[in-house]
Amino acid sequence: MERGEVERSLSDAADRLRKPWERRVAVLRIAADLGLEVVLAFHDSLRLGGTRIQLEQRPPRILLYRTGATPGEKLLTAADEWRLTPRERFSVAHEIGHWIVSEQLGVPPAETSRDYWRQEEWVNSFAGCLLVPERLIKTWLAAIPETKPVPPIGLWRMATRELRVSQEVLARVIVRVRPATAFLKLIYFVRRRDAYPILKVQFSTGSLISTPVRGTHLADPDLQAILKTQDMGQASLRGFVIGKCPPQNITLAWRRSGPADMKESKDTVYWLALAPSPKDPDTSSTGQTLFDTACL
Ligand SMILES: [Zn+2]
Image 1 (tube, rainbow, N blue to C red):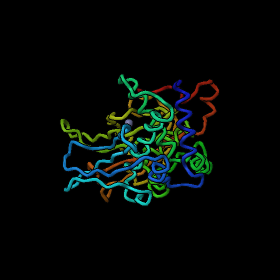
Image 2 (cartoon, rainbow, N blue to C red):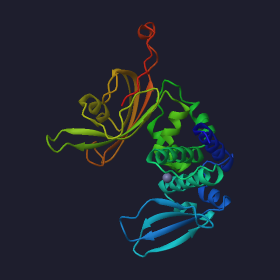
Image 3 (spheres, rainbow, N blue to C red):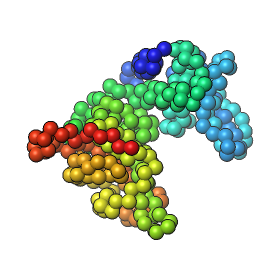
Image 4 (tube, rainbow, N blue to C red):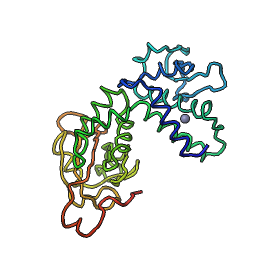
């Protein structure tokens, strides 16, 4: 099967498996419909973790590992959806993706690390498609002008209250639906060697807007000064440089969570949403595209 064909088949499968009116997609119901067992596996070892699927079992089993004082297993039914965290819901959707790739699309198990990561990319994208109905997101975004960032509080509310997914999963879908937008999650910390305050990129997604990759350390005092002004805000920035990205004209919206009184600590987290500023007549007349450079 061609690569593009697999991706299309997975996206079609996500649309078929979800009920058209579903907001909080019931992954345990979908697993049951496909004849898959989902088991909470408690263990007392910190080394075990995450999720895996036993494709060779009949019925195939998805194991969700959790740390617990007493090792044991609990078979989950569709009525147990509330027991799962957003992360576990994503993990179940991810493993359902592996089952579809293997059993329905007939793709053999990965033998090289390149194939492995390609399959991981497929099933992560499938899980996003399954848990975040694109039609719902398009309707939601229709109320937000293209030149305005998605309000970070709206991202949080839609992810946690409406869809029960992580903000990261929702942010990726938003960027797929609206490429001229971007999101960053930054964590505050103080660099040990010189006690300098740093914002570390913990998550980043963008398409037409350049964003620094995960792990980048941002030491820009101007950005920190903007973000420190209030818990939530918005600013239009001309020639804004973030990390090693080229200068961009953008509107930035942010939301801060962490200790009260605007004191910075290791628990301070910023979610940033970016949108292109309305085009400036001076720059558009040069024929330059503002957002044409991928940033690595
Ligand atoms: Zn996987």
